[in-house]
Length: 163
Image (tube, rainbow, N blue to C red; front, side):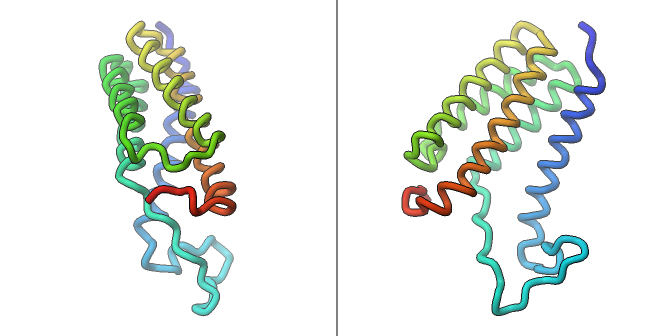
């Protein structure tokens, strides 16, 4: 099966950029100078922004499993992709997975599960293009869901978030 190299490279860059963003936001939490974008000064001590919520163990597990899926895609290791998909499905079964009872959040969660099932099916069929497209869709779903949680739920419904 012919691999679209540009798509695989783009996926790798996308994942690396997302992973670096998560790593830098958690590793430099104690040093405000590292959190300041280039060309901007740090906020004065009296006007500091509230700290970001730490990434939960569930989300760390999801990131690790997603990385394994990407590794399987770029190496055409379909067994590794299936294993990563199984890990992602196990994450969705955890009680901590549902962070809110909001119906839009529930929609994102169900879409995530369906997309992981598609990823697993394509990997089992050794369909690299289908698995790759499912992975891209999965990544987009994660980004949209996290944007929704940050921009809607955390602002308008903080009482609905579970610890």
